[in-house]
Length: 227
Image (cartoon, rainbow, N blue to C red):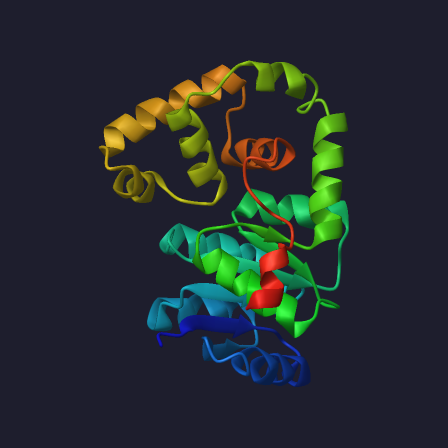
């Protein structure tokens, strides 16, 4: 069985070592490397090319957010799962903006962390349920969320809904083109039309919209008890 290669980034040695033991115990996940700082993580992603990076936020020598930004700029196909002690809205907002695909609080169980890794590997986003619920509520109350029902009334075509989901899941134009079997130029055209139709002009905004509208699944699903 092919295991999911994961880079674990955490500056506290005892926490990092404990996570490694707990996560690898599931059998389908392999920790291919461990980094103590964000800067070390950037270098190790270049060398090891893991599918998933489990990243702490508060670290010396380049924090987790900046490290995530650099990693995704160099390797758009990488998927970052933030594991943090902080559930503050500003942290979550920053994580979405830099392109991470998941956010878990450190009090999450190893079962939930493993499930999140599997979901990201499949291209799905994954948030701690309380954060996912708050994201939906805050988006609906925010100026950007005003008129959400009206926007939902603007029916998206099947292709537009599919494209929105892929964008919200962090895929870049080349990946989307391959997934949908169309050219990159056609993806760019559809993307521009979608932004104009929804009057949302950045990826973070599209992601928040997709979460609020329920277009992408982002909470812990009942299937985790089966894995």
